[in-house]
Structure formats: structure tokens, C-alpha cells
Image 1: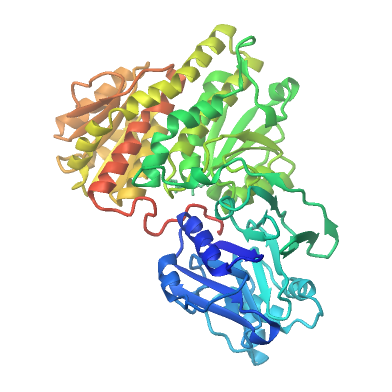
Image 2 (image 1 turned 30 degrees about the vertical axis):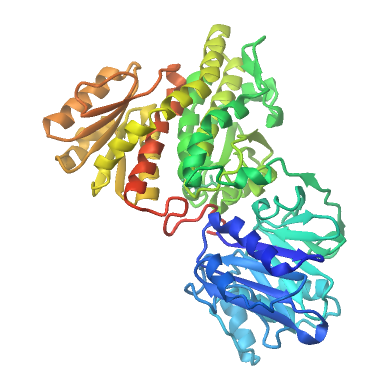
Length: 606
Ligand code: AGP
């Protein structure tokens, strides 16, 4: 969603900030803006804002927009429609204070009413502008104190960066529920809401905690709490390199990320398999055998694609470790006052590690004394830090809004976790060996599937005209059907619905007709005959069928054959051709593949 970039140093700031904003485009936004110190306290700040893309903003930046300190923002509308006025930064009436803000100020309307009654004139409909006026009106002597004073009035979430014309040697930032990362350069400092904006300049970063503020100067930074006590935040090195954010010769990030999957899966497995005991080592898990044996249930929480990966994970844990397990959307869980059970192991799943609904569920669970593991891609992200322990999925940066490689790596990480729990409990050595052999086959088998791209592309052309599609699967195949249906909707905008194949005759069969194609997940497992019966039922009603299966399906019009792995691991592979199906269908329809309409990569607000 929204993105923040800031810089203080010796270089011309506008091009640097625009480049940073471009790196954040993948998060989704509707407008952008930039404010700089124009040099000297007397001249105040300069600002340019534009509805639309970063390139629209760039076109509006005048040639004489020069300075060496500035802040910039990409906005995703929450309070007020996308417009030039509502874009950030928001500036005080005297051009002295500029603020960029991610998050939501919950009491903005009360504060706005009070400020308006005091004669403050508002230029936008945003919650952020309230903060700008509060900083501008603060009586304190230092910028740090002014920001602190302003923050005392606000309730809600924020990641902010503040510029003040009278304090031209610094940028002050603060975090509460929305990420802020400092980037340390050579006599220059950066700030951003996402390391993607920094890594082409520095990989030395400091991630602020909630309730923390920082002052950044060209050659120095200091961190402290919102109450003013000093904190010690040591820099860490970002493991992702700047090149991993490039398109690498592909036309879209989605295509690149689909094709990165063999390497990504290799990475999540690397160094974790223990052949001697037919198990795996998961360094960050912090769950000894004694604790693992006491787990009575596993509850997995995530949103969207991560929830689907969690559904697959729950089945693997139940099958391999024989612990009752289920997955639930974190967005639902946190609103239903759930019973929190001390013998349940809670697992929060998130690619970004910043999804607000997941973070809020983790915080609620911890408040109630639960033990929470994170299965997360972004190292050091809010959910990774909030969880008691966890497993990183090591997919590398995922830029396309639509998740592909991270979904696959998360399911593999769950395979590892299920094997680990299973081998502590009742999974035999020979079953452990069998699963390890299956895991090791995955990268090669994914490469085999990706070789079918040309055929899948042809198949996709045949579906581009569909108004709606049905995805079905049974037990292990059902979460695969759900994820494939989500992929198609997100990227092609074709309506798609996923159903358990076992539920067909309880309703959805009424929809079957030649114009509604069905995609069926048909693994070669103990439910093969049941799945074939469902295909018969659809065929008998003249429905068109595409099967994803381990062998050609006679009743299907077309079959994409995928390599067979162990039954428990098959779901990891069966969705991969359907990522390509969604991709090529969207391409045939001319969709904006990496940035589907109305969607953001990280949903950091409620
Ligand atoms: C994936 O294709 C989606 N864009 C979306 O469902 C996503 O998985 C969801 O918002 C959760 O994100 P997270 O994994 O970063 O928490």
C-alpha cells in the first residue's frame, strides 16, 4: 500500500526519491508526491504532488527543484479520493512542515474539528494533514519534541517522516504499526517503509520498533522511544540484493517469479534436511521435543494466498504429525473473540510480514498468552518480530502484487515443519525418508512443469473469453483449487469460484453448462476414482473440463499432466501450471499483470 522514501546527504535529492518511489510502485498506489528542503531556512520547503503514477509526478517536477534533503510518498487512498490535494506530503500553511504518513489516524475527524475551530484551514480530506498541523502548532523547541507533542494527540497507526524548514539538518521519523526502516550510507542516510527502496544504495539497515522514533542526519542517526528515552537499534545487513528486484529479462515480475520457483524451493530446503534422523532442522523454531509433544492442536492464520498456503500446511501437519490442524483467515479470526487454548500452537503466515489483519491476530493471541510461530518471507518484518519464533520461507523478494513463488515456498516450509513435528511424534524413519526424498525432488519437478508453458499458453487463450470459471478439488486438491481460482481472479479479472469437488451435487452442479469451464485438480491418490466421478457428472451436463492430474483424464477436454510426488506433497506442485494459466489468460486479455486494479502488495491497514 502506501510507501515512504526519504534522503539526507549531499546528492541531488529529487532523482533519488523518484527512483525510491519507483521501487515501491509494486506495493500499489494511486498518487505520489515529494517535498524537499530548498536550501536555507528562509526559503521553506518545496513540494510537488500528482494523482496517478510516479512518472506523472516526475513530469511535474520542475528543473529547479534542487536540494539535498527530502521526503516522498506513494499513497493508497483511505481518507479522501485519489487526487493531487490528497496526495502526500501534506504541508503546513506556512510551508514549514511537511509530513508523509502510512497508516490510519483513527481520531482524525475529532482532531480536524478541533483544529478547524481554532482557525486551521485544511487543504485535503486526509487524516495525515491533521498530523502536519499538529507538528506545525507544537510549541516545543526541537523538531523531535514537536513531533512527539503531535503524536501524543493521535490514536491509530503510523509510519511517518517529517521535514521542517527550521531544522534543515535532519528528518524525524516515527513508527507505530507501520514499518519504518533507516538505510545507512556513506555520509548519507535514507529512510523508507520497505527495504526495496533502499537496497540499490545500501544494505545496512535499522528497522524501527513500534513506539520508536529516530532522527536521521547525513552522517548520524539516533533512535529513541516516543517518550524520549534512548534505544539501541543496531544495523543489520539485508540479504536481498538490488538485482533481485530487477525484472531479469522477463516481461513481468509475475513471469519472473513463477520461473524462479525451482531456485526458491531449493533455497527453502537448503541446510535444513537431516538425513541421519530423517528429519529437518528449523533454526528459528525454538520448539524443543518436549514442547512439540505437548501441542494438542495447530491453528494457522493468514490472509489470501497465505491463508491458502496455510490450508495446505494444516493438511500436511495433520497427515504427517497427526496433530489436529486447521487454517482460518486471520481477518475473520481476530473479530470473533476466539477461544485461545494454551495447548494450541498458533502459526501466522505472511509473505510481507506486514499484513495488518495477521499482525493484529498475532498481537491479540500474544496478549492472551498464546504461543505464536511466524511463517514469513520478509526477514525482520513486523509479524516476524512479533511472533515468538518461526520459519523463514526464503523465497526472495516478491514484487508482483500477485503471489506465486512465495505461496510455493510457504507450502514447502509447511512440509518441513510437518516433517519436523511428525518425526518428534509418530512418523516412522521410513516415512521420514520418503518425505525427504519427495522434498528433494520438488525443484526438478517444478522445472519440468514450467517447460509446459507453451502448451499452457495455448490452453489459456481458450479461456480468455470465459465470463466465469469453476475450480474444484477434493481434500488435498481443494486448497489448490482455491488458490488457482484466486490467482485467475486477481490477475485476469475473470470471475472464478472454488468448490470442494465433493460438494458439487449439493449446489454448484446447477451452474454447469458449456459456457462455464471447470478446472479440476485430480491427483493420483486414494480419491482418484471419486474425482473421476465428479468429472463424469460435469461431462454429462456438457461442461468443459481442464484437469490438472498425474495422468491424462479421459473425461477432461484437456489435461495438464504434472509429475507425481508423495501424496502429501502433491499439492505443492499441482497449483504451479495454474499460475501459468492465470498469467497467460491475463496476458491474452491485456491486463496490467504486475499491478492488478484495486490491489496492493501489502495490506497494512484494516
Ligand atoms: C496474493 O496473490 C494476494 N495479493 C493476497 O491475497 C495476499 O496473499 C494477502 O494480502 C496476504 O499477504 P501477505 O502474505 O503479505 O500477508
